[in-house]
Length: 298
Image (cartoon, rainbow, N blue to C red; front, top):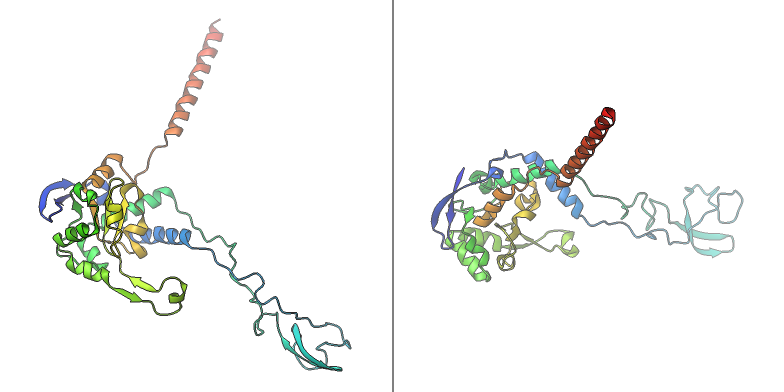
């Protein structure tokens, strides 16, 4: 599979053969699973206040003929707090127990609960490769909501040296992404309680820039709404397929694709330490056998 390399001016250049990562089968089920794992591991633990609904001075005797008991009154035997008393008469109201006003919850959320999830290494790598190959299919990218005339996903490595946001915007205009820039510039107020919980505004997800190494683009492009920048080695499903839906508009630098190919990223890697151990064990075995053979000859 080959792709055209675009310059910073937005002109087509030479072609480039894409590595194996771009030829993987698109597996939406695996991508969704990997995204769920990332979201679960990023969730902030939450729980109810320890003393919520338990701080009321509520008690009720369980003995008959005792003062301040509920026996013979035709009421439920619920813990109650006493509001006033006149001789042997008094008023009380239900408290403390679940089901009473301002009482405790029967099973409140606990901050000690472990909400993290795990995923096999090879399965996770497969999901990343699958998400990478989905970024090349124009139909999938369009279904994600991105607007473009031509899917330009490989760009010259000079893009990594852009240190100003206005230059990044100019580059995007050269690639004819005016409509995409308009789409991601919109900011809506969220309906509901989320406004009071640190997520007042909703923004669209824009293009993802993938670079080979640390560069000025990491800072200059990230200040555009909805645009993300990431190094190739740090790629994950959360960036490539936000929300678990494959097909984010992704722009790779030429150096990033070269690194993908040379280092064979997101493929199963042989453990070097394990191979060293095997060699040591085999050496020891050969030494033992040679000693035994020598002893027998003697």
